[in-house]
Image 1 (cartoon, rainbow, N blue to C red):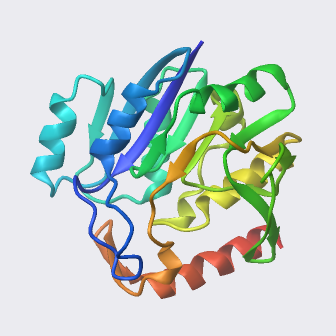
Image 2 (tube, one colour):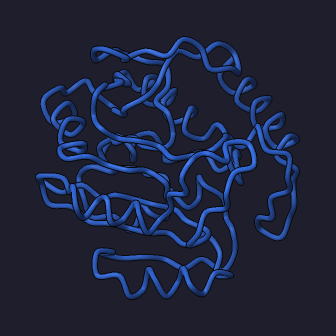
Amino acid sequence: MKVSIIIPVQSLKKQKSTRFFYKSIFGIVETINSITVNPPNIDFEIVVVINGRNDTELIKFISENKSVTRYAILTENVGVARAWNIGAQMATGQFLCFCNDDVEFEKNSFDKLLNILINDEMAGQVGPEGGMWEGITSGKRVGLSHIEEADEISGFFFILTKAIFIKSGGFDIEYTPAGCEEIDMSFKIRQLGYKCLVVPNTGIKHHGHHGISLKNTNISYLGMNINTLDLDKRNKEYFLSKWG
């Protein structure tokens, strides 16, 4: 068995958050180091998708890093959903782990989640955080003390089998450049009849500072630009029209 850890990334260094300035900066360098220090107990590979080729330092770091099994350098930012789909196509593992470039792992973090997928045939997606979903907003968080089913698994880190990923049709690129594509995936997995499970106490820490909807800025992608507040509204409207 093998797990493919798929990480999309745009820059080598994270910017300091003006909202959460007290948080330490944790980026792709630290994430890859964390994986190599606390790897899964089964065979694994690290697949990196560089979303745009503007950062020469990033390209150098990834291309020369012996821990990275394979990588793709995209000519421009194609968005999260497409980057994840590209990573999945490059992956050779039976399990696909989708990971942000600012996630930290403790010993056995991967194994606690993989054991659920291996031993529960109805488990379709597992992750360390998730909850219920109400319309277009996040609801009650679940799985805080014991394993629980959720409507959605948080997008910074989750694992599913490649077979279920193929059945789902992959991530919906209508959400490009970012926002709601991970919620949409959880909904598709549950629509297929599988469970989305939150597994607590995995020792997985997300160092993210804020969601896309909380940052008023512009994103360039595929030769276009969109304000993040407009993007958040657009994607939530699309999600609601799709799922009700």
